[in-house]
Image (tube, rainbow, N blue to C red; front, side):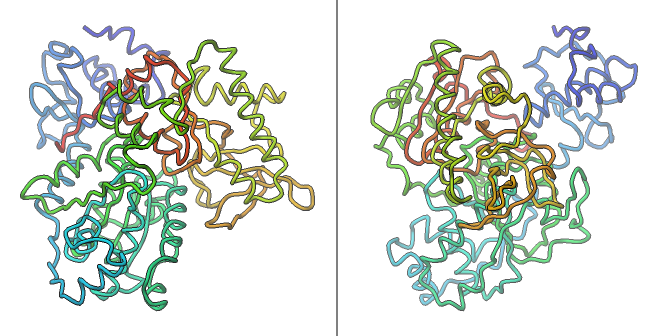
Length: 545
């Protein structure tokens, strides 16, 4: 049985757990349920498994917090095995009903021979009609709800551009009727850049190219959600005024944000969700993209999935591609054999903390010195993107915070120090300054010798600001795998020590780290930690499935 006296001690609770327990009042049963509700949401699950946590017998009677779905109580008893927070229950019920029953199926517009030839021409006739690439464009025209999934390098953005070309040419859509969005500012910027780059190769008229939206934006900005606000400008009563909404990096969207988005969609709006369901899910509760993929398998589902499999970046028989495939399949022995199999993969055993610090310091010192001597922001970011150290954990000696502290101390600075050549990361959205969570900036001297922080603003475009105007920042010498989502680097170094936090270090985390690398992946850690992580599928519990 759980030791509630220890669990509910004030000094044992984090901020959210403490607030929930305090709000529950003096009733011990209510305190327990409040603790569990917050605890499991923080773990990512949207249902609370009673048996799994030895809670049978803990609640001999229904407290004031527990009831059925009609009771209005904060906690809903699903069955003998699960309970669920009322708000999450209704959000998942709404989303499931929308994609299975209530969503608009679309007008099933006929694809004429001329239309098909136009679509085939978008791919220079390299694909047949039944290929996923061609079916993706046809589905975008005919369906109102579409999942475009695939691993890195499978051409999701490339395909999105051709979907939009088909919608403009065949369905007659106009530029102002289409909007692009992503969960984070970094992902939105990368989406915009990728689409602009893909447009250069598109064999259509300049007039058609002019129809494409110029920039992506965050989902928060799209919905009119201000910082720290739970209400949105756009909702059921005031829906979004677009006919097509394209969302990239959909695996990062949590249950609350996805629900808010669906609430703001008109019945005739086309929604295209693109992402990789094998990557890490959202930081907050939910595993919505994977849940939608499961629902798409149902015969009665209105949402359709098109999955791209061929990677233009990785070959299945190549080092990184073969490694990612083995990890995804849960084959830990094969995955470990892939390390050091060729020049694109490497394994370095972590023997001692001193040896680790020496290695990391050498790697980062060289990079920082190169960025310090960069002659332009473009050169500095090119250096930054050549190699990135990723950590499985945030805290601890081998986490990103531990590495940051070690490097800062090595430079005689115990706090964030604005030094020439140093990278920083935004920790919280700032809509006024137009910087967003996970955005990376590099501090450089300008021509006048003043320190400025530069942010990428598209291909070879940068904007700068006074670093002292920024708040909620941290160094970016290393970053967690979670923070790296939506980014790519020539070489990735993953720090994976043995840890007791086995629930967090999972197969998806390893896969996500590997697929951030374009040319080389290096693992620093232990064979056991690597194999244990791959063996930990750690699927989130969901009320939708």
